[in-house]
Each structure stands twice: as C-alpha cells, then as structure tokens.
Length: 318
Image 1 (cartoon, rainbow, N blue to C red):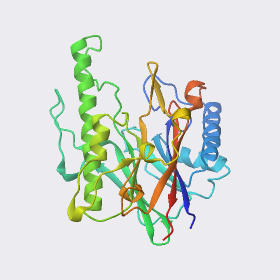
Image 2 (image 1 turned 45 degrees about the vertical axis):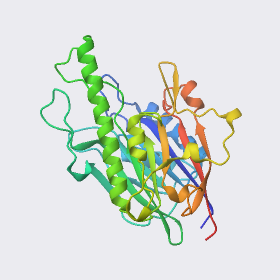
Image 3 (image 1 turned 30 degrees about the horizontal axis):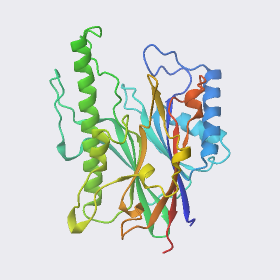
C-alpha cells in the first residue's frame, strides 16, 4: 500500500439527473445542462486525484456514477451512497474510493442515544439527522483501516414553517433559531457517533463534509470534542487545516464558500489522534491541505458554490 494518501471533500451543489425537480423555484436540468455539470465535475475529480472523495448535495446516486464514467481516474472506483427517502427529496451524501473497503458501510438516519431535541413552535422533537451520515471503512494499508464519516449538517438558511411571515423580524428570528438548533443537534449526534464507535479503543477515524459553519463555531467545536475518555484515549478530533505540517501563511488562501461577500471555510476534514503527530499513538501526519476554489469566484452555471478540500496524509513506516 502507498505511504501517501489523498482525501477530499466536495459539496457538488445540486447533483441531480435531468428532469428531476430538486427544489421549488429551480427548474430541473436539461440534458445539455446536465451534460455540462457532470463534465465539469469529472474534470474536478481528476484534478483532485484523491484516493477518497466525500460528496455532499447529491440528489441522485446515478448522477455520481455518470460523473465517474466521464472521468479518467475514477471509472473503476467504488461508489457508496444511498438514494433519498421515498416521497421526500432531500440531498444526500456519497463517497467514491479507489482504496479497498475494510468492512460494510453504515447509514445513520436517527440521532444516536435516543437524542430528541425540541424545536421552537414545533410539537415534535428533532430525532433524525437532516441528511443521514454515511460511515465507510477503507483500508489505508495492510491491517490499517480508516473509518470515514461523511456529513452534511443543517445550513444557516432559516427553517421556515408554512405559516411563518418571512417579512416579520420575529418570524425570521424564530426560523433562524430552528436552523441553529438543528445544526447543533446534528453536531452533538455526530459527536455521539464518534465517541460510541471508538468506545475507548484507538481506531483511526476521519470526518469529512460540509459543516455549514466555520471551525471555531460552536457546532463544529462540539463535533471536535474534548477531553480524554476510557483508558486515557483522546476522544478529540483535530481539524486538518490546523495540523498540517507544510502550511505557508504567505500563500494561505483557504476558503470554500462566499456568502454576502464573506470568504469562509465551512467544509472541513477532521482526523482522530492517530494523525496528530503530537500524539504518541500517531500512525501518520497531515502533510498539507489545499483548496480548489477558483470556480467559486468565477462562477459558471455548471459549477459548485463550494470549493473542494484536499488533504494529503503521510503514513509512518510500521
């Protein structure tokens, strides 16, 4: 197995087959528009040249397979994903890997530990992820598995109810609060998943995806966690951007999204202590983090409004 591993996360923005209406107010793709989008995505995949790519905003897993078929480097890769639930078209996540699987993938729909979070003005508590979390184990090297969690947390878009007045500041505030609570609940649910999966064991883990918040935001910090669990095991996750050994502050142009003129990094890759060189249990290190984001500024109809995050890991000799 190789000693350098490349992993990427990419919100591909409304990846849907032609004719499929994915949002009210947005016309479905024509055949020509769809062809342009999957051609562009195939080129981005090949530019990334990552061993694993985590994807968000997938409305059709067939569309992911179409992108792979048009790429040069991923035609024979393994694709893991799930279709939206019947009668409820919401975007899902997916994973494309050139590394072999190390076990069966798992789809997490319900918040773990019976977590139920009340939402303002709603009778029923939140008990499910807005977009299910995908858990996939891949083989980095003989005897060394990495379990990847692909996530897409709730956006900051106000969570309006049908009777809300979108011109009333109070109604807008309530809708924004519901979104904040949903994102926080999902971040806590993710933290529970990570803690319960490791359960005091030293198992290499990675979280990849769109957090819809910056690294210092409370939901992201909840997912990162803190403290030591069973047997002195460090249960924290570490943001790759801050771990990288080759960061150049003079050329640091990392961002993945632009909103209201603000350049933000809301797409993250987190790793467990096995990739923190400060840990005596480290099995590797984060060499660097790169952002493919020119298309976010020079937007074309077929492109994404998110940049891709590419992480290079180096495995230590074992």
